[in-house]
Length: 326
Image 1 (cartoon, rainbow, N blue to C red):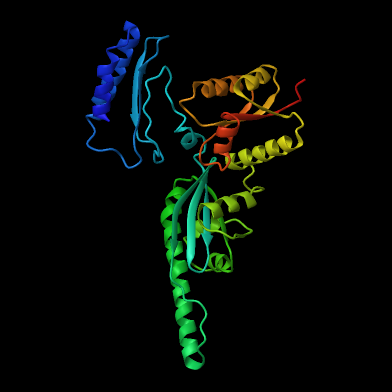
Image 2 (image 1 turned 30 degrees about the vertical axis):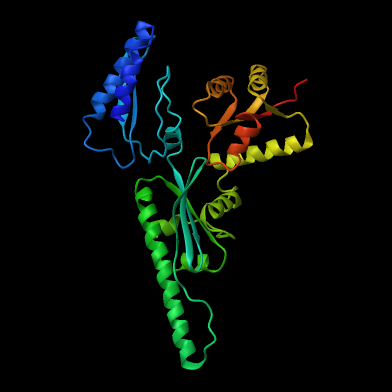
């Protein structure tokens, strides 16, 4: 990163406007100075913002490790700080725990804002049915039960490892538990998790067909009544409304950046979904304009299944109208 910044400092000498050139060089120099003082990058990564406010002449440089892991590399010289990658960490600090468990498979995840994160997905070995009889049958049944109990204990230990620190930080709102068979009931009734985790598991337990991220998404959707104030559910509900109006072709959906801007100025846009593309200045301008007119804006990325559809089909933005435009 330091080498990259040194190259950028060299390139910045070609900027024609002296004030802009000086501001860029100062920001890059400040960033290099701070980075060279670090012995290593913190576990959650690093965020840095350096620059001069042209209106006030004030120079600021911030460097910190975010509360959650940074999953992207992003560098930009621009007139604004790009904080969009960190906003979910601040706005949606509270989380819902997600657990899917069956006889020999489990998935542990978190729901934060509009993001579903798979923390771990793993398998155990629990033998299936057998054809033996007599004493052999009882012995093998006992071994199967022991293997099953051992696997549930393993799931519980991993759940505790992930969830207890979040609970201790008072950031876990509740926990959803589901699975395809009876294992979820056994897991809930048994003594497999810390009492603080068990207290947060909500009823009902959810019947699910899948493990992994697909299963977690299915459970979140099934729990929509409980999670209705979560961003993930709000965005999915809005997307369903948009699809409904598109199917009816009733003129209650708006897309195309110029068309959306005109509708915003008329106060006609109720809600807007924008694909998260920090490099698209038109979309960034659209977000600011919409928020200025009181439109509810959801900025979504790959965490939403339909996000790519919004990006490719609608040019990055699609909205629901308050009233039909003539």
